[in-house]
Image (cartoon, rainbow, N blue to C red):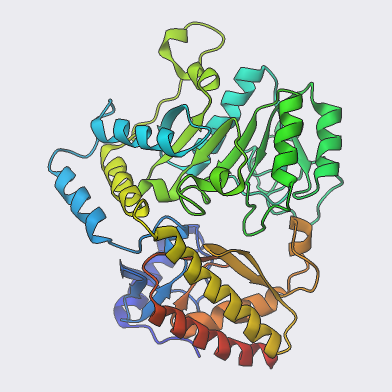
Length: 431
């Protein structure tokens, strides 16, 4: 049953329809029945303008791993705001955050900041092209790397082509970009190796999410990818915008024990503020050094808010919390219980489905085939997914279309209520 909306929220939704394309900010798809406007977030909850409370598993698409308005993050930001908001110059919080990232992340010998994961990944691609003096990149079908022209090749193709031919997933992408991107199937090391063997002389980099959306890498896949790229001296780029400081303090590199040459970080490391980072080996990152200006090697990288001190302060405060003893054990335990209970309820209800992912970020697919690559996800029953998400929303559980994100703020009571909502969703799915 749709949730009633207050007059104030209705007015805001009418303004959204009038002034925003599709009546949204572009992040969350809505229908007139599902649309609402968030008033505030506190801890594990968000609240709309009609006074409804939701347990939040969207978490701003992942950054709010501590929950909303964590007191130590809020205090750090408030304290710093009296000194200004941005300088377009070196500042202590950004330098200290760079130091913390280098100490935490295996591949990070140097760090350069930007404001979004999209830009961080794009900058990694540009660095690799300049370093390797090649143009082509190989990425994996279904991998999400932001909204640059390169990233949007075969991001969500509805009619995939034969590998390694890419499919653009947006209007407005120059056709020439297709000539510079090769596509491989995630988790298929043999097929990927074959493509790299054939095109290694042309490749500037191989770009991968070490954990693709919610699909874990098969044992040996990332290790094999590291071995083949090392063999041909092709830079390996990990997009750790999601996994960075989520799977483990040092990200997927620590969790899976595979170290790339470059990596993009974002989301959690900004503490909910606009901040992302390009991290990598010193010999590649040196191409940003102004000492090279005037040479063919130099890459100018400038951003008005890159290394913003307020964002860096929020990031440092967040990372201090994550370094506390027992943090990741708690996070993993919360997600593990939710995944196990959801899988149990689906099985008991006789619903064909599988829970896929990692305890800190996962989803359910209503499909029988093993979900180990993008094409398998196309077998998902979209109507069942819509029903599941809608029922949860009506029960006060807010998640994105394709993921549950887990936070340290999610309490045992939140988990119990979510599991109860799962049970109600089972009844709807059986109809």
